[in-house]
Image (cartoon, rainbow, N blue to C red; front, side):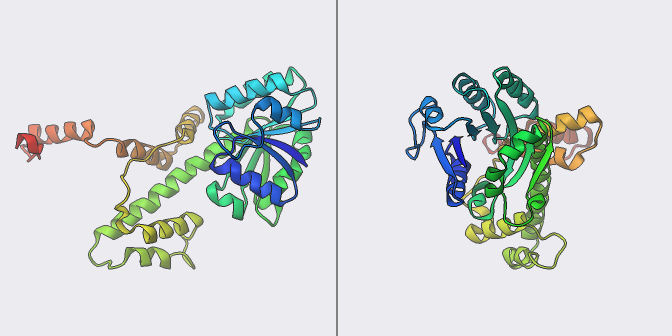
Length: 297
């Protein structure tokens, strides 16, 4: 199958390689990458035989909106556009409606697998019309992990469902990572534990907490014991925030996901104003000792 791929970053380039290895004809475009097969979106569209299928794999938000807007001016009725980035699910209805005016199909596809997807395959969560999903199935089958389709691919529902499922997936990921990280710190804080990395490694088989994320944590500890090469600053790409907003709208309690997101916010404060206020209050009502900054000591 022939397909145009817009975006050749860490995941896009690996996806192109995996698809080509499966025998598909993939034409990639990325103005910021020397590996781009064409020099413009227009050239990309011209290289593809109609009816075309194009996959957008660029950062969510304005870059995705701009790419889809430009494609809407270049592609033709009967073509299909897939957004495989981490777009907010509410954007999908806007993109779908915009393209539908010109007879262009639209699918949203949540993609999980990161930089390991080239070798292991990608978990795919798709939203859109069944006919469009079936049309793109050769691409989905090449990208997903080997084995039963239902174990690595889902047509989650109409437009927006794929990115909604991926939003929840990433929110769960926040909570899992936070729990593993807190467990790591607790192990590292106890003198009785003489080899934190070996304890984590021993959990990889037979335990109820074994997972791929645990394997990655073991690898990270082996690569940099104590994480001396890192700071604690941890960014977020938006899905956790959106999931919490959805949880509020649906009155669904998500205390673990919320705490994990707020922990990331805390990681960006070198000196927390909140904790300064707590320290000051303890001193005010109970005369508890405070720790002044060295410049004032």
